[in-house]
Image 1 (cartoon, helix red, strand yellow):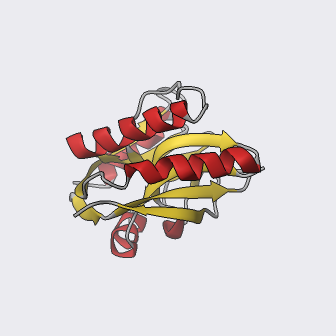
Image 2 (spheres, rainbow, N blue to C red):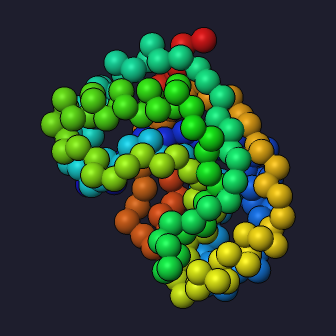
Length: 179
C-alpha cells in the first residue's frame, strides 16, 4: 500500500540555501535537501484503488492559479519537547485556497478529514532529545532569516516509504496550475 501526500516541491536553488542552516544542533536528524517540500495534505497508507481515485480527484484542481511561496523564518513544532525544526511559510491566500480545495476533493473521494490545522512549512530536521533551550539558542545563533521566495507552477502527489524520517519521496503525479 502506498503512503501518499500532496505537496509543493522546493526548487533546488532554494533547497541549497535552506541546507546552509544544517549542523550544530544536538539530536537533529537533518532532512536531505532533495526531500524538502511543503505538505498540503497527508493522505496516508491507501490501497491501489483509493490511490487511483485520489489521483483522479486531484485532476479537478488544475484550474487553480499559480502563486509564489515565501519562506520567512525558522520555527519548531513540539513546544517544550521539540520534535521538528522548520522554515515557516508566509501566509498566502492562494496557498490556503489550494490546500482547502484539496481537502474538499479528497473528502469527496472518501478520505476522512485532516485532523491537524494546516501550518505550511518546510521541515529541515527531525529532533529527538533536543531541549527547548538548545533549539532556541540554535535559532538565535542562526541569525536573521533572509526570506526566500519561489514560484509555484504545480503541486504533486508524493509517495513515501514507511521509514524513520520519511523520504525518499517520489513524485507519483503532477498537477500544473493555471497561469
